[in-house]
Length: 319
Image (cartoon, rainbow, N blue to C red; front, side, top):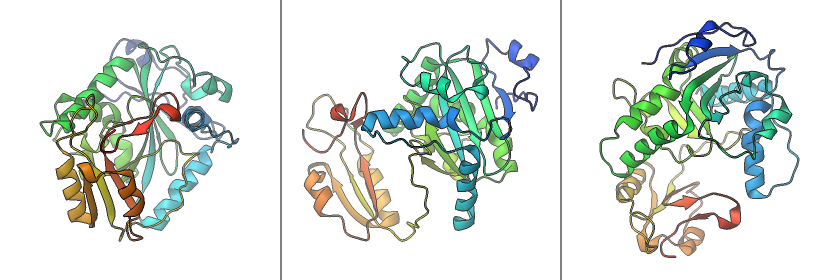
């Protein structure tokens, strides 16, 4: 378990802890009152929103949601589902950006298209249904170190082997500093908004110090941007799944995915529906064979979403 130094509730006042922790992996944790933020979530969601808009070519001007709107969404979902969710932003920021809680909209946008740097450090912000936001910052933990641990977790899951140090490491970095608040607030659903380089990480496989997977204590989900996501609730309780994927590929440079047959079979046993594996994993089957009861489509495969949508792809069987 990581040590948990708590800063002064006023994030504009620097704690002595932040000075002594500057060269360590000990997290600095402080609270961001919603009134201090001016009810703005822009310093968090704007880079995510505008990054995805640039990728997709969506030119529409969409106003970023503020903190009150975000917390209203969380409260509404709690009432509709009896599940209490929270948003967790995980991103990298320049090491000298010590007043991230004071970012203006313009300064947030200025970070959108800057080149990622190996000196960027890890930052996490918890947005609960009510009350203060919780900010976790690692002044001495750089982008390459975090991505290496995330890669260890991803490779371990792909090999269907022991998940290795990456599983525990990522849990300790992201979840452990927030555990007290998550338990106090009785949160049971975690919605992650992840920075580039972390989005393919299998977050459900993170493990705590007792070797419990995160999904044994929380349901988890991924979201590209809160502002760009339709958060209206629609129950999928009785929905079947169209499960598709491949454990090997005709494209030579793509690594095999040996766990895919087990993955699709497990989904089918739980939810029912159709399985399309390997040579049956085709665009025509995807378009023609989904029935109205299958409101969930699960694709277990490789993909790339870099640069722009013209050069991005989801790999089906073959070329």
